[in-house]
Amino acid sequence: MIKNLKAQFRWTYDFKSNTGLAHLEKLNNTEINPAIQLNCMGIEGQHDFMSDMEPTEYNVGDQKVVLNRVIFDEWATSSGNREYAACILFNKSGDPMQQTENWEQLVVNRLQLLKADPKTEHLHFTLKLDKLYNSTRADKLLVEPCDAKFSTHYNVARKWGTAELVSINKTKLNITLHPMGIQGADDFMSNIEKGKEPTIQDPRTKKEVPIFRVILDTKNLTDDRVGSIMFGDKVPYTIQTNKIES
Image (cartoon, rainbow, N blue to C red; front, side, top):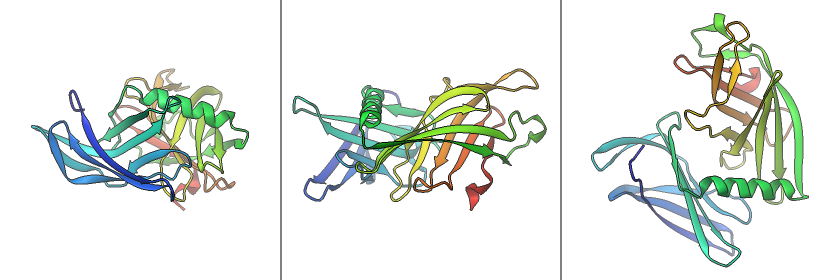
């Protein structure tokens, strides 16, 4: 986290071809050299940009930080004014996250428009997550295998959508998954704020175990979908579909 963070962006857009670029040039008074390039996310009718880089360390003032992902949005309001929103994810895990005050409302408004659009296709399906990955506590695993119910809402005309982890086994969760902005792929990932993680009860110990990340790859909206759910706190572990590494 960077205290009192201010980010300076530069962006260009060709409205005829619906293409553009943005750059993160400064954090507070520190110049980012070279500026971090943010590519157009390709969402029709929206000017959204996202970085595509490995987690990279930067010096910001007297502080060292690792930037994971940078997102910048621009849009016109109903009154014709232009507004901006931004979000920065830190460290290799993408946590913590800092965002502008209007970021959450921007996400909510767009999800409402998406779900209300008659051209949006709504799908509901269940994935069996039966592969344990990178865990030192397999004997304490609470939900292996588990049935994870998902829903997707995708608008082909707008080339944009969202997803939701509805439940794990019989535990309702309703965790929103946002598009990852990877060109040519319909991949979604949760953005769960640290300290506000939803939990699922370990049936053996009756303790609540936090869920800190959910990833869904819909394989271009085919039936060959794969998913991954990351649990735990001090000793995290992952349960995923067997096909996720194929």
